[in-house]
Length: 181
Image: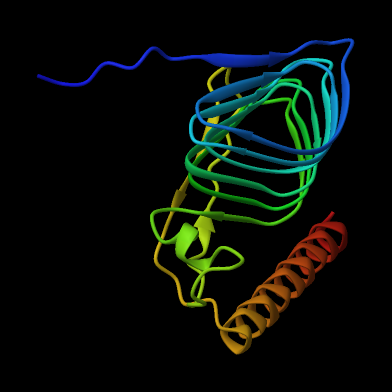
């Protein structure tokens, strides 16, 4: 027979201001302000109107408020419509809703956690971001791409060359149309 544990969620109210380190054996919902470090074995939710200047590590991290700090989600990180995150995100799955704000770097996918700070260093897998104008969130999924610095620089140089070529073609097409008119 499977063991059943009662799921508990600790709520930090909107009128609460905490500095330090919080560790949760289950889940937490932050509605106030917090500065420091949050670690949870379950889900951490940063509610709308909440402000966290903190690094957050949990199984699942859901953001509706402001997070200034790094986020590590062993399963899923979710940035909802009003989310604002300034910091790096490491997660197995990343969901970003249209309207969310994210400034930082992200590592996403099954191997992303292996590259997290304090863990064994391996080349990071790049991510493919698909965006669309819809009410559904954007899911970032991993793709296997070699991201060595030289390869990345070569790829960027190639893209710059292509963009420059497109600009020249458009300019030539405009001149031809003007001369023929």
